[in-house]
Length: 227
Image (cartoon, rainbow, N blue to C red):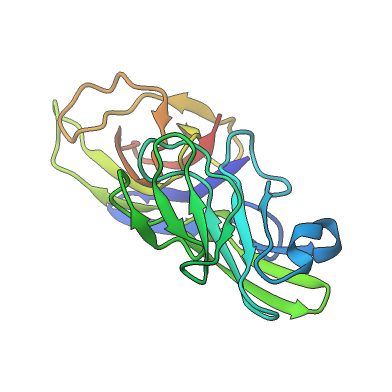
């Protein structure tokens, strides 16, 4: 599955175009609540594995906060990337809480950090009840965008800096083709503007990734893919 934005260099002009990663309405998943019995009641919580997602993509923790309000958060703990369980109701605090079993980091069901060792909140996604039986969860990564800028010449050649959302537990490659009719090939990159172009795999850590590639001559296309 290809994620990201294809970048095109033609002469001295730059063009950027979104590549949709999943269908005509990328980023939106319609869920039948009947498939998740735990969500039938307020304070219920369940873990969702996204349909059609590549292997390794973090699951989503869904929690029903009220009759019409749902929370959806990334299940990857912000401390050491363990997978957190569904939320449970804390009657003393009158709220749903997620506690990581690895080192005890605690979060509200909406992802807000309650206690460490994690230093940041869980990433939250939009969850909207469309009907009594249907919930829509929006995941931006399924409509990827990727930024590119021209960097300073290195060893006589220009480089492109590619920036893209790199989800935790996924590994990314950079691929290139000279024309739309030629096959994609995996290309080496560097994590630094002037570093050697010797890397193939980019491990995602749940933050934007940055890689540098040799600029094509005179034109070409790049894509970011999961492997």
